[in-house]
Length: 256
Image (tube, rainbow, N blue to C red; front, side, top):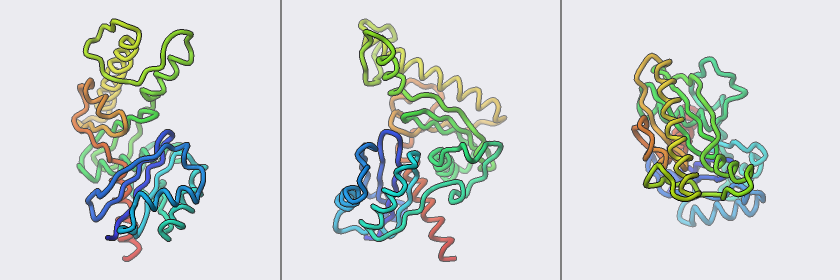
């Protein structure tokens, strides 16, 4: 079975997926700090893909530049393919009023995927290690956005910068008023971030002079959706699907 391998390298985790056509065949993840050795990574990718499948191409988006050569080499060793790296040159999306050199390719891939899916103005909330909230215009242009620390960073910072507060795993509490320290921290994190996200989304929507659809992706997207009033849809695999679309666009242009 011929497939496309999509790899999203984040600061904390690496998300991988196999697509056959537009169908997601398999999804798995690894910790980013485990991907230091090229040959070990090649073996790991080959085992995850399985003997019955052989990707005809790979598309990667990476926010940890030092890992570029490791993943490039692993794809060559494991599958004999040279991966396409998503960047401002390979992603067919106009950027309006934002410095390209400072724009993370993961944000642009998410914007590209969202606009291809809906063909209308959208606000994309990517809730990972950092939370980004970006606008795509009705014309399909990346128009900029906001970056704030993610839930896990906020929880870790609160623990690291105080003497007694514990490290918590962010989760929604049943009530707003915490009855112990962990409940109080989690209520503050989730409800505080829900208010922050809703406020930013409303400000962006007002400045967009339209009614953009608000979608969320990333590891904490479902958690935020439970408390945010502005999020309408959750797409856990938005970036991976964007990479598949990007490879398809690249392969089509190569043939043409």
